[in-house]
Every structure is written in C-alpha cells, then in structure tokens.
Image 1 (spheres, rainbow, N blue to C red):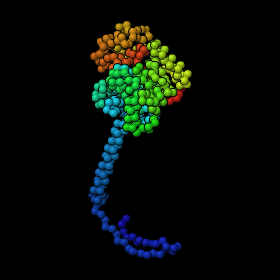
Image 2 (cartoon, rainbow, N blue to C red):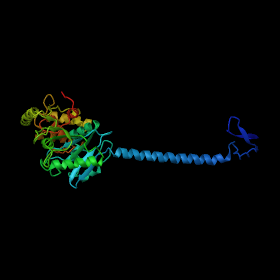
Image 3 (spheres, rainbow, N blue to C red):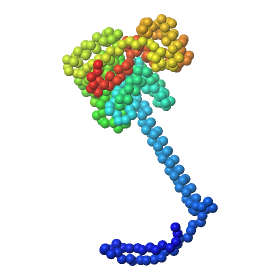
Image 4 (cartoon, rainbow, N blue to C red):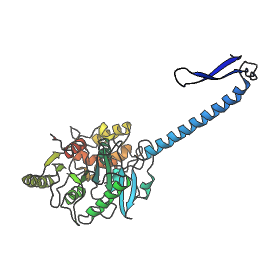
Length: 379
C-alpha cells in the first residue's frame, strides 16, 4: 500500500552496524486508473508485450519450419554428374550413417532405376527428367533393397555404368568412375573418408562386383570395400579377400554351376563366402499389388488364369521373357494402370521376371545381405 515509509540504510561494518541515514519518504502519487480499475498505462504496455510475444512466436515457428524443411530435404535422393559425366544418385539414411551401399544395375538399365520420379509423399525429384534416360523408373526390387538398406543405416548410392543409359558395365573403365562417384558422395555429405562400403549388383552388375573386389590398382579395386553381393552372376577377376555372398536363381543352371565353382575356389583361399538361392514365386493378387491397385490386381490375375498362363500353384508356365503375359494384362488392366509393361523398364515386367526366377534383380534376401556383410552368420 502507499503511505509513509521509514527507511534505515545500514552498513555492515563490524558486529555493531551503524545507521548512516534516516529519512522519511513521501508517498508516491497514484497513477491514473481506467474505469474498470486497472492503471491506464498497463493497457498500452500489455498490448505491446502481447504483440512482441506474438512476433517472437512467429519467428520461432518460422525458424522451426525452415529447420524442418532443411532436415527433410537432406534425406531426399540427390543427383549429380560427377566430373561432368558420371551420373550418380544417392540417399542418406535417417540417423548417423554406418556405411555405404553401392547398387550396380544390369544390362539395359541405369543407376536411376533405383530411385523414383515421385516419392510416397508426392515430392518430385526434378533431376530425373534431365537424367541420361529421362526418368527414374523406381523398379520395385531396387526400391525395396534401397529402403531396407536405409533402414539399416546405409547411404545408398547408384551410378549409371557403361555408356550411361540402358548399358552394361565396362569392367576396366568403370571401377575408377565408381570410386570417384563414391568419393564425391563422401565429400558432399562430410562422411568419414574410411566409411565402410558394401556393394551389390545383378547380371552385368553382379559380374562387376568381382572387379571391385580385385586388388587395388588402376584397372580395378574399390577402396574401403568390405563386402560384395553379386546377384544372378558369377564374378570376374581376382578377389583380394573381400567377403562374398552369391544370390542366384538355380533355374539358370549354367550360372549356378559357375557360382558353385567360384565358391569352392574362394573357400580354398579362406575368403568368407556363402550363397542364397532364389526360387520361383506364385503370381497372386498381393504379388501384383506391388505394381497396381487391388482391383486391377484382381482383374489381372483373373486374366492370366483365363489365358492358362499359370499352373495350379500360381507359377508361370512359360518363361516370363517370352512375354506371353503382356497381352492378357494389357487387355484386362492396361487402361486403368500406368504401367507400360515394357521389358526392362516396367514394374510389372520386373515382377514377372522375379516370379519366373531365372534372371532378375531381387530384394528377396535384402535383410540377409546386410546381416552377412555385417559379419553375422546366415542360414
């Protein structure tokens, strides 16, 4: 309350404080009051405070939104033409990367097949339209392998080998190009220079794994390579001791025989080696739904059965690359799905090759691939 106040000011010298001033204060004048009972000055000051607080909150929210956008942008796929002509794509995992997985495509393919033009959230990767092939196919098996590797903590990298579009790998020229591409990714993302590199590839890309595992030199050998997973192919060149997991389709008996011989050779040289065999898969509605809506998958399966292309277990009666399945599916669902059914360039085409299990990229053992490369035993 306002009124007379006696104030004693003391100094704390010794054990007996001595008063140095004693004065009588006059009461302070009362501030003007608003009819509702609060000081008039508080109206303006409160309004100013609220405005300042609101502006500060907006700044915080804007800063948080910018930070979130930057955070999300760091995890989307990235594209570069390393040294002007090495088409390279990569994507970071969420969290601290523990390694890098290089994926090598097969013949008639390119590195952009591992990524999609449009992500699940609708985000569009504009660089795809300016890539060597003019698009990012996002083929189903490659995408599944990429997603699994990222969940396991790996940066996923792909490079377009050979001529750069719908091409096989050049076994002597491409190892150094891949090495430069990986070095670009490591430097761009400020990763450790000695980060562990794993590599997998199918067909021509599978054979290319052997060149990467060769002794380091001008014509081969990828630095920091800890493990290779060649798919549906034997390997070329001398292995410098890099652990090797062969993933193959034994219905291709010629390739299976070659792999069996290479496994024996690696074991004799005390190189850690194993194999996983990919078998036929039945064509079902769930299987087709990887490339089309549920109703289209139901109609497509019905068309394949009506054309007598599936046996009683759902397996293809004829080789998928004979492409007898194309006409029934085009007639049944071609008008309702976006798939082109084009060989080596369509989701459904790759699925049919996976079902046939003779010669196709596969992500069936993606978890086991990571387990093996991380040193675990696999059944």
